[in-house]
Length: 398
Image (cartoon, rainbow, N blue to C red; front, side, top):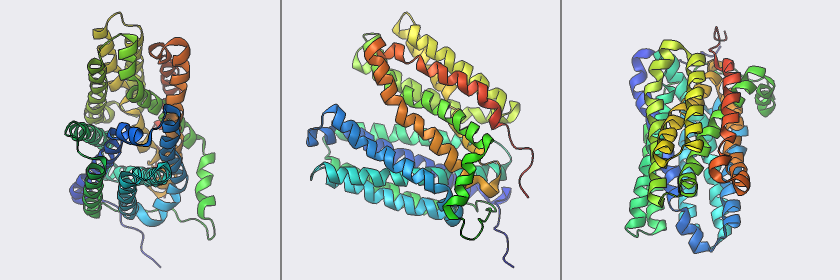
């Protein structure tokens, strides 16, 4: 008879908490570092916007492929080993892109597919670990882990801007970042806590066992909830700067500042949100956040002046901040099946990052980008309607 896997206890969670922060932060650094050098890679490969979009789609393709399988991967190997392997793969992929763009488009596409694959499984694994820590602590902390990711993206973007300003070659910049991210993450996750008891599939079940979670109504509703908030978050990240520049005729620097305000508001909402979640509960807080986000969106779209748009970006960022992390917590309520459920929810949520940019771009061609952002209001209303799905499960599985 084999012993049941050890579960995390409150007394040993400080190292695991720090390690989980590190996993989120370094993931953000890696992604933002690549994104900061896309213009230079585009210029070197002489890519038109349509071709660049197809190249970048390789990341999304890799992520979706990984997310579908990540439930089985994490359930079998655990979050620590999964993040270790995926951090190593991401390091190799980022170095591959750093050198590959000198050779042509094909090496970049292959490297970005691997980058996306590593990112998808890493994402699920670190959320499973974050949920294990959250359960062990007995209080909400998942949004703060996601705040760490936001801090990592800001740091990676700022460093990337500095590298561009200093004319540091893409290859040198991304290679150093890749090695730093890989070494730091692999070292940090040694302190991950046990994920908890995992439900074992029947012999021969494999991937078919994990696919059954796609038929669970609550899991699917949590996925829709995450998709709605991810759409609000991703659309803000992709389009706020452009909307301020084009819609309010503001200088490019002002558009970038509005984007920074949105990111800062997201980070603040994720850092301070756990206090509200612990006091009032998930469902009332996320519904209130959706209303705040909707109010900010309407101010941003219909405001009479740029200053009002900035206020709207601030409220929009705060309102969108808690949806994704709360959805990850809800998917992980039962530790025995946390990995496959997080995989399903993350897969549905990531569809927002695939569909958001082209949808807003298509609408923007007809009604201007700033007016096209009203599509976010529909998704926030949907999030409010299905928010009951994130209510904590009454009891854990035996």
